[in-house]
Each structure stands twice: as structure tokens, then as C-alpha cells.
Length: 381
Image (cartoon, rainbow, N blue to C red; front, top):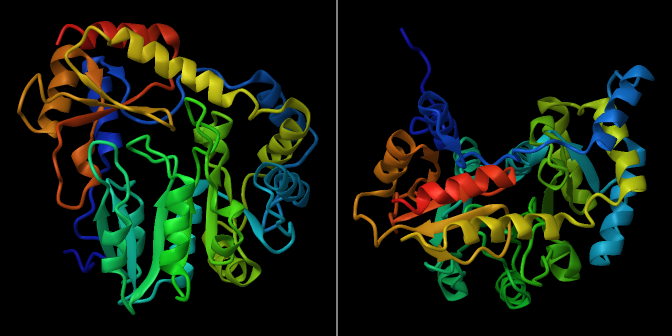
């Protein structure tokens, strides 16, 4: 007996879980799931211990620790020139995924259309569908994964409620430019279309490129919810903490969903993160740290038959294997794991129609020795 009529009948176990399980089963190097493979700064973990011992173990305020919200607003002002009210325009969340889900749950009704760019991170479309919304996919233009704004314009109509953007982009590593945000502004100007901007990799950009946040563009900011992640910026993905920023009228609706989903988030870690940001400048060398790892990984595969697709941000590198084999990317990813001992993510799974461009995603947020070892394996294929 199964009386449940599933709201997400086509959703199963994520590819990240599958590939990580396969990597464990076959003893493979796991460059599939996107989490840092190195120790967290002991200054940060010691602060968590400090606040645990001080008894900061009960509920934090629903929107997050006020001291942390003030610190974050000061950071956003300094970084993007954007004034945010710490009382009414920012909320600490249980990671970016919860922020994205509750943002969508606050505004999407049955029949509303949401424009997504594929390949799209896998939590976007299900959050739309479970609330009766309709995902409308616009494919990024392979191989550089840029947006064709004319195509976006053609997809918009009276049912379009939301456009979800992601930069730096997972899984492709592409970046939105000033021109992209100008085009976005022009498209939504004069409409009631809202923007959800996933900016969790804001500190990880390369080759002198800067992250372009919608917060730096006043007209976009007025209609945007912007999502950030401490997991990505502080290398603590397992803590599941992030925050989001929006105009007060939108944040009011968001908090209605937030308070009945998680209510509030981990107290001692919020205290620790606040003190850590104030005293240790944790974002100062993130770009250089990951750019060196990207370059190390690329140097280790320079003799391989894989073709490198430029990575401008995030800690993911796409590799084109079309000169090696013509089998589909899921099959090739499985073969790499089982036969060659290195796990990756097939990019086709991020497309609604499983578009296969013979591209795999590798996470280089790992120890140097592991990246060099992985590179040697890839050079043998």
C-alpha cells in the first residue's frame, strides 16, 4: 500500500550521492561531490568550542544572531556598496539550499513560470515544481556557457514570476558580466518579474575577474533575493549555514516560510562565525587559494587527452572528453570511477533533457597531493 501521490515523481537519489557512494565502493579518488577536502581553520573551530562552553546552545533569534547580521551588512556595504538593514533585510539560513527553497515557497503559486538556466543546479527545479510552478529552461551556450538574452526575452510572458541566476556558476564555472546584468535589467524593467540570485561562490573567481552581484545594481537589488553560503566561503559545508538578503517586503514573506521550516539556525556557530569574520579577514585570500588549486590541477592534466573548458569561478573544472570516447557522460563517469579510480559528475544530469556534450565536472577543492594523483590518472586515459 502506498497512498502517497508524489509531488516529485521524477526525483530520485541525487547524482552526488550516487557518485560518492560509487567512489567509496571502488576506493576511487572522489572529485565528484563539491566539498573541501582539507581542514577548517582552527581559529574558527576553536571559536565554536568557546561558545559551546559559554553556553550559547539555545535558540538563536529567528532571523539570525543580530551581531552577525550587522557584521554581514557591513561586509556587503564595503564589498558591493549596498546598504542593507540588519533588522529587516537579511536572514541567516540553514545553508543556501534552504534559502532558495523558502524563497520559492514564499512567492511561487501554481501556474507561475520560473526561468532557469541549464545546466542548472539540481535543487532549483524541484523547489519550483513542488509548489506547482513551471520551470522554463534556457540553455547556456556551450562551450563557454553564456546566456543568450534574446532567448530569455522570448521565453518571458505574463506568467513569468521569477528568473533564477547563478554566478559564479555551478556546474560550469562561468561568470555573469556587467553586460549580462545590464541585459537582465533591461529585460525585467517595467515588469513585476523577480530575481533570485544564487551567489554562493562569490569569493571564488579567477584570472582577475570580479564577481558581479545584483546588490551592486540598485534597480536589480529592488527586486532581488540574493543567497550566500558560509559553507563555500569558510570551507564548512557540513555546518549548513548561509544567509540571504532582500527588500523588506520580500524578506517579510521569506521569514514566514523560514520560521516554520527551521525557525532558527545553529547558535554557537553563528557566534563563532561572527567573531571569526571580525578578527581574521577570512575572505581575503580565498580567490588566490583556489586559483592555485585550479592551476595545479590543470597543470597535472596538461598531457592528457581531455580538453579544458575555462573555469572562471567556483571550485569546479569542466573537462571535455570527446576526443577519448563517444559514450555518454554518465556511462563514462561510471567507467572512470570503477575502472580508473577517479569519480566525477556527468554534466548532462544538470539538464532537463539530459543534454550530453561529453563533459565531466571535477572538484578541485582537495589536498594538493590528491589533485596531482588524480591528474596522473587522467593522463593515462
